[in-house]
Amino acid sequence: MKGWLRDVRRIESPNCDARPEGERIGLIVIHAISLPPNEFGGAGVIELFTNRLDPATHPYYVSIVRLRVSAHFFIRRDGELIQFVPLEARAWHAGVSSWRGRERCNDFSIGIELEGCDTLPFDERQYPVLIDLLRRLRRRFPGCELAGHADIAPGRKTDPGPLFDWRRISGQKDPGRPQIMARTGIQGVQGSSEQKDH
Ligand SMILES: [Zn+2]
Image (cartoon, rainbow, N blue to C red; front, top):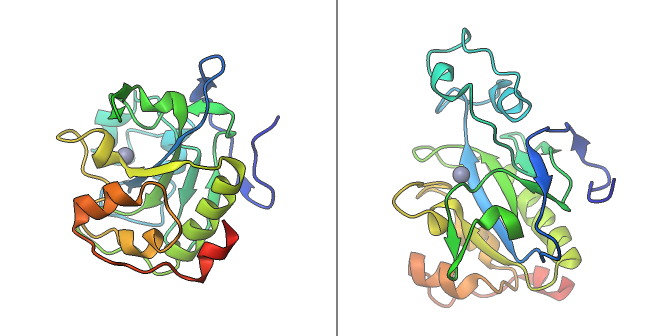
């Protein structure tokens, strides 16, 4: 099947389906997730995305065990990158959402989950992996914009949260940057050497 990145660990999720006919990928959505909440390193996220979560393992799991969700990618705290859904398929990560007046962002987006939460900084090892992944995705889908889950589902979602460092990735030549800069108040952040790849 098309849409699996080379040299990336693959764990197939059944929680995906076809994108609408002729749909173009135009958005990358950054998320944060940790299971159990605020705990890192366990198998919870992988189990959730593959419908193998055991509700007996943690009280919180009882409330989410019936969810059928996924993302295309998951970046763990140690920088490990896992792909769950091929790029051509629609992963189920955004939920009720809207971007530039278009609803159902799953139709036209790629979802990247970072192992993290609202109250702890992301691990330094996650950013280089994310930046490299974004570079690969944009090479494949030129002009793809970038948003946080909170940007497309305001009031409902907060991830990737206030501690996600948008400046680290807005150093790239980024069509979504005006929105990010407007939202975070970032002024005059100069691009890095990574710009030359675009
Ligand atoms: Zn999210």
